[in-house]
Length: 92
Image 1 (cartoon, rainbow, N blue to C red):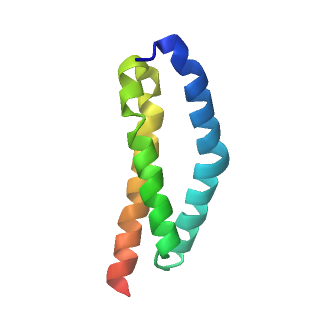
Image 2 (tube, rainbow, N blue to C red; image 1 turned 90 degrees about the vertical axis):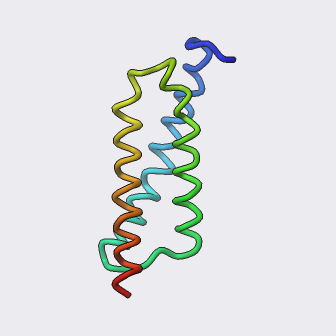
């Protein structure tokens, strides 16, 4: 089991990955959904992977509750995207 001190490097990598990879891609997906488009198979798989990765961070919250607001906002953004994707699917 890792300690809070050991988590520092892991958290830095995760945050950098989110900032430089996940968030820009999710913004592009959101923009496509805002145009009324449906998710492609690739986008659906990417969204699923992003949610899975975010869920894997939940154990860190026990040791680092200071990240709870950030993770909550990430999950909320993913929910907005999935809700809009579902709405677009129903409207087509």
